[in-house]
Image 1 (cartoon, rainbow, N blue to C red):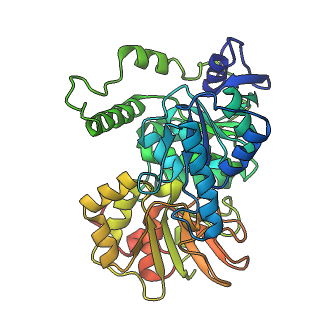
Image 2 (cartoon, helix red, strand yellow):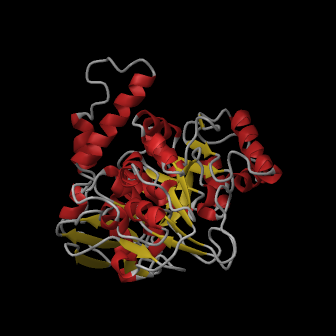
Image 3 (cartoon, helix red, strand yellow):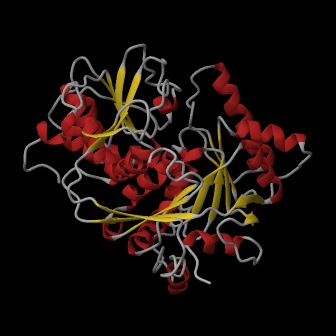
Length: 448
């Protein structure tokens, strides 16, 4: 029987059962993730159920990233609960301030995500890891606690909606614009409890950073997951990650360090959906004419071309988050901001997604460009994305951000506004003080 990539992953994790869309299965998980907001609730439930030890201390991941470095006493206590639990349980993958990053950028960077894995996290943007052909989804804190105790979780295998992207992307159009366009087409509930499978010639040419951005925002269309079949870009990303991690441990000089083996390549390639797999629906988009997009308040589906938004003033620009805080995003922002200044009435805050990205940006001179432009560069943290800290909006203020949500009050006061865009539009807007197409502030010979 033909299967989608999602059905194949569930079949492999459900004890040998053939898992098809609509089936209820108990499946083993490869990673169970929590952060400083959601994990303390899971820890409380874990202890109330009488559990003594986690099922596998190598498969539990704890990342204090939302309110860290601690913004107040309450957030410090949340982090302490996480820290103490990690010590008691001897959790291998606990990432303290100074070593951590925004969780959904950190896990792929640390080599914890690979094709075919089943990953849960008590955070809705856990779906990010589908860019590496894993089935990854957000769960509640009580489900996370149960998974810590038992190593598994109940799922209803989702139906798959296939999105085929064709054409050639215009200058400045990125993965962020593709996912905003998709959400604009189907709405914030258009893929409710569905696996969103992204494919087609455009996706095949996307970098891993852009694929991660697309999978990250599947939840903004109601998706249970976002997923992309493994290919050469996937394998290259895994190899580069392995080589970097090997170099960190002194094993980088070993012959063929990090290489994806022939067996892995064969096994992972077989995960791709079968040619005659059954989809709940198929969308085909020609994105040749697509220009950079902006999602206006207060829904990610309220999408408009940037060329139609020439008079929208902004008070704050946020570049970063688990959606667009990777090195390629920072490079785009730096190329636009280089030699220019942030508008005097605008606050521009930049969040590298991990310590490694921060360091790479520093080595490439990007941080100097940002500071010279009068932007602020923060340690890795979720910060203002969820209205946490490091950039809360006051009443009546408007931000344009490379984050993933723009609901009422998302970044601060209930009467503030958040617009969503990619890093190119955000950086250009920081310069002019209004939502701006990048071509308006950079020479024609600039970055394509």
